Length: 191
Image 1 (cartoon, rainbow, N blue to C red):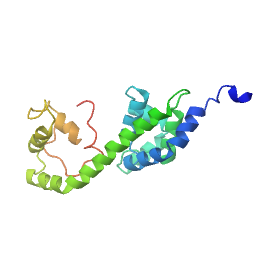
Image 2: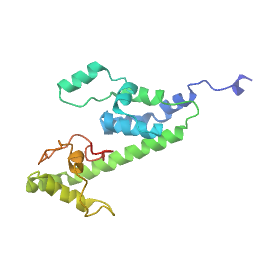
Image 3: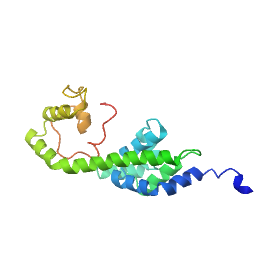
Image 4: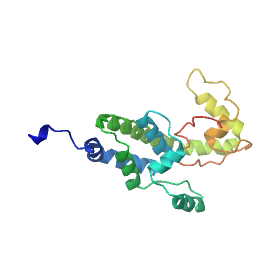
């Protein structure tokens, strides 16, 4: 009968929309719609790095949205609808729903762990920041001690601590509160 015919072209997308609904909502809640965590997710789903401009287009974030965010001195964010629509529109026929579930689960897990760690460590980090006076060399020394082998104890490349802390190259100190997710995401480059 007609059931043997090809599935409609939206079948994979519909499956992702229904089967990943709760995961997409959880991801959006944890990321607070941040372009950076969304970009990292999409880059992994696409299997290649996606520049922020492309992420903005995929999320349908307009110039007006950008200007409004800039006016509030906040980074632009996406709504849950923008995020879900972008995920669903990224699905190609034949894409595996399981891949979407796996990738979403990895990102959700990373953000949940980060949130837990940050919550537990915030009082200690604030105390350390106060004692260090926000001085980059002292903060860099802490990062160097926390680094995994084989980097542990080795000096960071010039500018790396500034990139990690999201401060200008010529900054000597940093504030105690980072932008959201700065501590979760290691930038891909120090430029």
